[in-house]
Image (cartoon, rainbow, N blue to C red):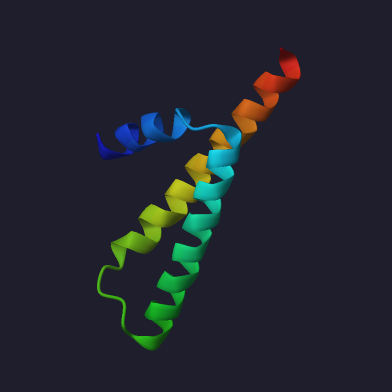
Length: 71
């Protein structure tokens, strides 16, 4: 349920907004990695969620690119 809701929220974004979201997720992923390396990370499941969100954003970006190329 949570991922499908997140997907619908992301699919409503424009390509530029998806790029910004991807940048924000990449920064969060970096910070989480840094916290894990220093032993300060409490929510280890967040690393997996962020990685999957990055994949979702990249997939939507690719789909929108292909749709723009076709029509």
